[in-house]
Length: 217
Image 1 (cartoon, rainbow, N blue to C red):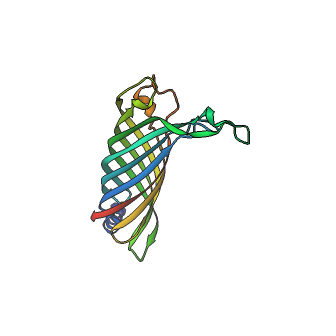
Image 2 (cartoon, rainbow, N blue to C red):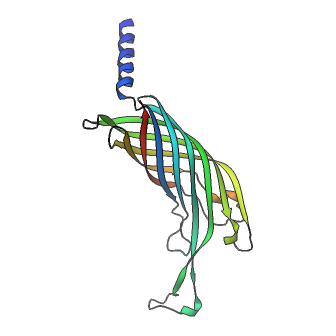
Image 3 (cartoon, rainbow, N blue to C red):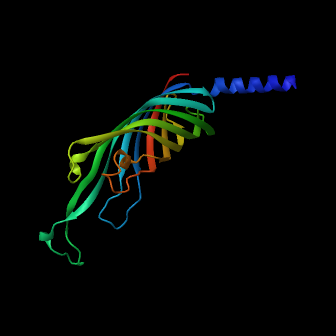
C-alpha cells in the first residue's frame, strides 16, 4: 500500500511538472443573444463584451482566473413610415430601426476552470484541451433612459451574474494559445428597472473567442 501511494505521488507530481501551463494572461471577445422573438418588429436582445484576466493553474487539470470585463447591450424595434405606403407584397414599407434599450456594463469576475487534455501538439510541445469554466461576476449595468418613452437620463444596477462555458483550447506556439467557447449566462438588463423595461431582454446564449499568453511556467 505504501509503495502504491508513493508511486501515485511520483506520477502526479511528474505530470504536473511536465504539463503545467503555469500563469497566463487571457484576452476574450464574446457575444450573447436571446432568441425571444421571431417574425416580429422587436429584435432579439444582444450583448457584447471584452475581458482581460490573469489565470493561475494550480495543477494540470485545474486553474482559476480573475479579471475585468466590459461591454454593451441593445435591443431594437422596426418602425414604419406611413408616408412610404405599401410594397408589392401588401406590407408596410419599412423605414428603418431604432434602439429601444441601450446601455453598457462592466464587471470584475472570478472563474474556476477544469481542463481535460484531448491530444498533444508535438510541434509546439503543448497539449490541446477541452475545458469547463464557471464564471461569477459582480456586474454594473447602465441603461440609457433617453431611448425610452417619457424617460430621461440614465439608470444603473449592480447584480451578480453567473456564466458557464464549455470550450476548446489549442496552442499556436510555445507561448500563445487560442480559446473558443459556447456558454450559458444569466445576463438580463431588464433587471435594471423591470417597471420601465417591458420586453424580454435576457441573453443566455453566448459564443466567444480568446487568446492566452503564458507569462510563467
